[in-house]
Image (cartoon, rainbow over all chains, first blue to last red; front, side):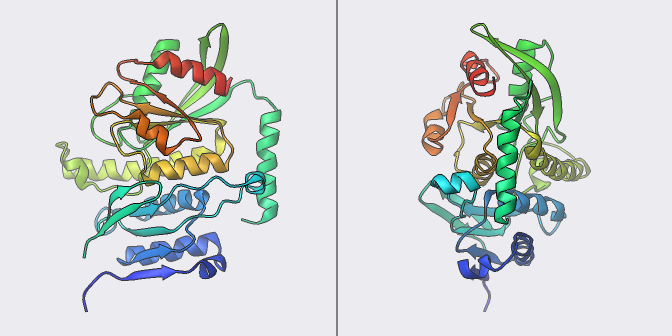
Length: 115
Length: 211
């Protein structure tokens, strides 16, 4: 059957992985054409690192980058402000030539997946 | 990141603040074509009589970060001296085909795309060496882009002072209100860097936030 593969990664699985393990897994899957859905998303630092790694892997022929769909971070409480720990939110990442954002609001994201 | 590392990072921010540096290093960030270099040029022209770099309608015109040290801004008798870093536009994708539409040859477009990817990496690396950020958004565009969300998230995580500039208000379809609604927790200053509209309000805000 032809189609686009979707990998839905649970929060529990993501919590067991280091940042680099997560980013490597995401990039490898996305480069192979898979759309990756992360239940708990990435931290802002991980998002920046993902963009950095993506730039290193763009080859201008087969891989031109990624499309990331996520909601803005929610403001945390006192402890989260003190220790800087912010949990990511549901995030969808795919190859830029397959995933296209249609509408993005703070509480709604519409995207198109091209076969 | 471990708890110890997070605490260490947090205390570094506090110590940095307590050291009260004489001059803050302020990065100008944003997606490609938001008007970052136009704003940097406007600030330098107004206060130094110089420019930062060339601007173009072709995205990723700035592909290397540029630093200008010791820019003194005076507002209402208060003066603030800052170092300005004009950074390349951040993006999650760079396709050389997009540059062909502007009449570039394939070779030029590929070279520009390669340099643009290096520029994005440089811009991200600069985040660790800044004391404050001016985030430039195009007020005619949807503000909920991944680049804007990632930049704001990283600035918040680093506890850096932030001014969001809603640029291009001289254009008829500009909506700074949309940017204010998207990031209500931050100061948003609507301006036209090209025409100089409301630029004094931005200078006042810079003096307050970074002074």
